[in-house]
Image (cartoon, rainbow, N blue to C red; front, top):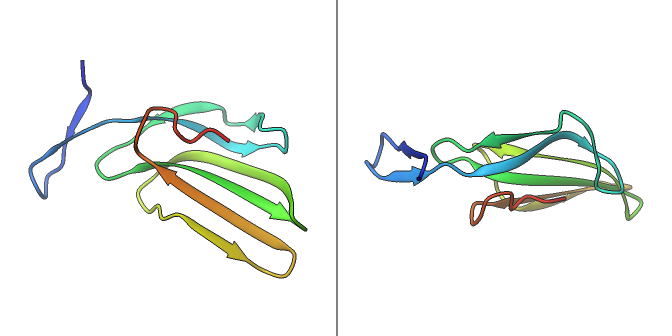
Length: 94
């Protein structure tokens, strides 16, 4: 019952992973626009991004991404926290 995708470069099968998708999540964790799901393809992972202003969460987003590395970026009043996961379906909850 596995939806599998052939990875062309190394010849292994990777199971597709279902991720939460939302263009904009509010401070309460509720999706305000673009609520749906996405399926990872190839080496994609699920991600959740949270944007903080003055140490308070402002908004965020969720989805599938080919380029995904856990990171925390800072500027004077804004921080962006990006988390990636590929260990279980819907692992990118806000």
